[in-house]
Image 1 (cartoon, helix red, strand yellow):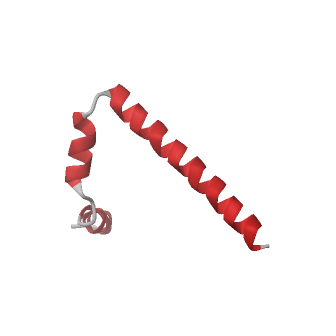
Image 2 (cartoon, one colour; image 1 turned 135 degrees about the horizontal axis):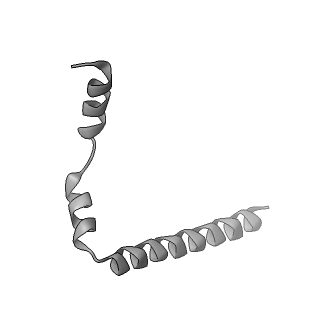
Image 3 (cartoon, helix red, strand yellow; image 1 turned 30 degrees about the vertical axis):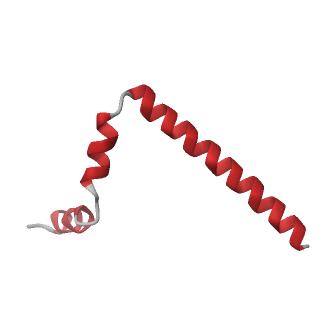
Length: 57
């Protein structure tokens, strides 16, 4: 085994393949909606964080 293979094996041990399988069971539209929902959650978190920072000043 060469060093590249060893590095790949190190990364693979930390990958949860069940999450990949679950994602691939979704349709493209479902995956895009999940991505959009995630983006909206991040936007809300950023807004709440900024609000909390402003209050602490």
